[in-house]
Image (cartoon, rainbow, N blue to C red; front, side):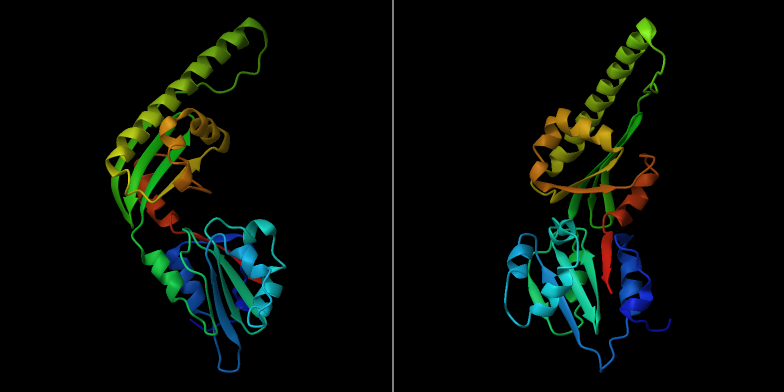
Length: 255
């Protein structure tokens, strides 16, 4: 595979890459001897202080990062900046960085260390009618529960029939929330104290309802990351591929 510059990679802002894809992408970058390179690692909470600094060694990165949306700068997992000549790339890692560092080299080691870490992660996947709850350690699925519960679709007609239909649907939604919440309790309780992060996936509004109604999730708010796993069909077969999604990073080129 031929070497490329950051400009040549054709990355769409916000594009997601799993561990293997990210490794392949970054190994293609040609850091020639005539190029000025640097690597920036900012842990969560350090972004604002860095941006307000006046250290001359930080100014090139301050100017680059100032072109990005505030939501990117305030990422809950921190950010990684890689520059090669006049171009740069920002990586939002899947899990929070623990140190802030600035290198005058193309240094991927802290990124690799984070992606290699065998985090224990709790996962909740929910769509109306089906749910999956799992615990992963590194790339390994170590515990899971999946189930299906029929939920009626929305009813467009009016009158008494619609009200009766809505009550039935609400009861079915309540039941799947209860079943999912019980599965969360059953799967997560043996690992409490060891689960480092929780990730949710599925339909946005359905998940929001679950978060409000499930005490087991309320107690895990401080380790629940805001990014959502894009899973269309929560079932046992899906859980194998979810292990790859857990380590997806989001990329933003600065050209």
